[in-house]
Image (cartoon, rainbow, N blue to C red; front, top):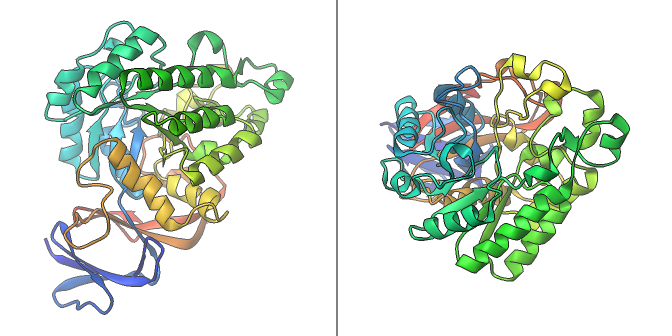
Length: 428
């Protein structure tokens, strides 16, 4: 592979520097670096970040290729600055065996737009009754370390305890979709003033908070790791904060849409705003931003949930839950966290690259921009502002809540081990 010189980039938002990539690794970082034999990219003060890592992506393959495939999903990921994604297990068939996770992992390798690390199901068929082949999935070529029934909650406390005990043996983590099912039967949106006025079934905050409270106590009891998916309420923040103060090994994620959007948008009855967990109140949004800033919430994860046109362009009650997010995540974080002064770019790198890779035990990603490190990099034009147009998405689906909204920032280049997957904002 040829040499690449990225000249004048603000590494993690700092002073402009040059970064020389030689093959798959970073060779030098400094100022005034020589460019002999190298392809030169004039960064002109753009932000250089380590390649982003998403701990929560739905790629839909196998089984729902009408929504997304590993190819289209990883192309979307690269467009959004990601060099690695963790693929959730709620496929058809469910990724609850070594064979299915290896299939997804190999498809990621073949397509080469970003690394794909499969997440294994906690229970067989996501049914919550019997543990999946956790050890076999970990020992497979895919090397699974994260397990989740996301889309469904592991609501049986005994099953959850056994899963936590099992993965402890190899340093794995259970990622919980915190939703008490009996408290959310028939729920269509957040339970509150808006749901009452619209006459839609409400999804109470306690349905999330009660499961988180139980699971952090279970994690403490067995001495294992638990990760909370798409945390969405102010009360959940307080529970995680309390658990961390006790030394419980818990981590948590927030989605970009829960950092920006509120349940007031549901007044439009536009199914693009129907998501699981639901959009919450302004109070919750502000609490989530503060918690991400102070480290109570560890990471940003997209919960990229693509759906075909017919599953979203219908009446509210019949619409599928979920939003695409890989191609807009960094822009939303810049808007909600950087431009508000809650995070600097180094903080963004910590929450969108370093920590997700650590939580998922993913080697080669979430590494410093330093000599000898893998050249997984994302170059961002933070001065750019543009209107979101889903017609230009690389994802197969278009169910974005940001259509027509102006957002800041644009990924101009993404490098996966020194190879450009995005050049000048376009897929290579």
